[in-house]
Image (tube, rainbow, N blue to C red):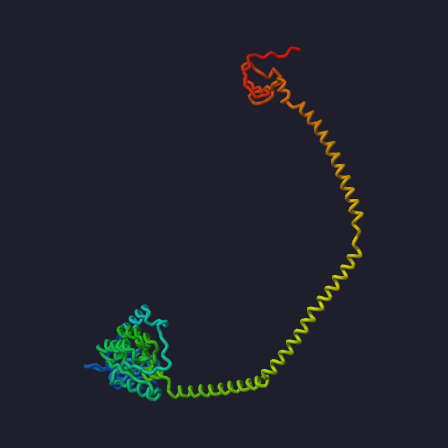
Amino acid sequence: MINSPEPNQVITVSALNQAVARLLERSFPLQWISGEISNFTRASSGHWYFTLKDDGAQVRAVMFRGRSQYAGFVPREGDKVEVRALVTLYGPRGDYQINVEAIRRAGVGSLFEAFQRLKERLAAAGLFDNERKRALPLFPRTIGIVTSPQAAALRDVLIALRRRAPHVQVVLYPTLVQGQQAAPQIAAAIDTASRRAECDVLLVVRGGGSMEDLWCFNEEVVAYAVANSAIPVVSGVGHETDFTICDFAADVRAATPTAAAELAATPRADWLGSLRADATDLRRAMRRALSDATQTLDNLQRRLLSPTARIAQQRMQLQSLSTAMMHATRNPLQQARFTVDRLASRLSARKPDATLARAAMQALQHRAGASMRSQLAQRRDALNALSAQLELLNPQRTLERGYAIVTDAAGAVLRDPSHIQPGQSLGVRLAEGSAEIGVASVQPTLT
């Protein structure tokens, strides 16, 4: 609060208005205010001046250029808006007014939040994925249009198609494009076009309007109808700055209905020009190919011989090859025969006389046989003598004369009576076998 002047104090009008302005600005912070636009004026400086009113009152408002350039739209007479403003007083005239910091269409706040929530939900469901987007047909013969028969957008689309591609047929799927019943009708029209499959591409169009006017294109039922369409869909709803859920779900978004028609149909003149250019290139290529073929034919004709001359030429070549082959086989054969004869002569000249050597070899064989027989006889006699001596030393012969070999339980031969104990079991080996005996007593040999 400001200090009230003394009762007898005199102040100026300017001071009074300044004090009241400060009082209002301190008492009323920034506040959202709803109302209807009236007396809107856009000054050359860029400032906006208008009156905000409702059924019972009105207030002057100003929105300076620094704020108005970020508004996103230019309000029109009668628009319902919401402004975020500061209550103040214009000192020079003493007029009570509001300074607008931000402006939006009435209800846009809640609508925009609903738009964002639906957009995020459908994006999470995959309706806006680029993998779902389809390319538009290159040569559409029939174009379907989903819009109102009374809409200005239909007229704009038809004019654009008639100008660019008069050969293209148009099928209209009428529907409401504004109001509460519009969304189900739009979805039904899209489903009908998809089911009939009589069009190559489908245009969903409507002219510009407020967010409330275009809200039927933000409905979930429309988004799913567009995404599930068997026909590629071009969305041309509103102006260039308008975006709807239908735009995100469509295969292609166009800034305006006219732009949608231009995207769907390439101008006939462009196609005709392209065809003429292709025809010119084709004629040039054919002429070039024919010219090359003619030159090749001429070259082959000059090289072509008559069959008789060709056969005579081949016969001469055959005779030449036969003569060359004969010489090629005869000369090596003669040379090889000469070489064999020369080697045979050398072999005969150097061949030794084997008669004396054969006689000497037979004499040596006779002497070697006699020597081997003599040595074998001598070795046999020596072997018999050694065998007789070995037979004399054979233990078996000793056993046959009545002797025995005595062994202990471990098989060791016993020679000393001191190694034998009474009652001990001994093994006795005889000439015809062996026996086991017990020792009654031991008498050592007396010396």
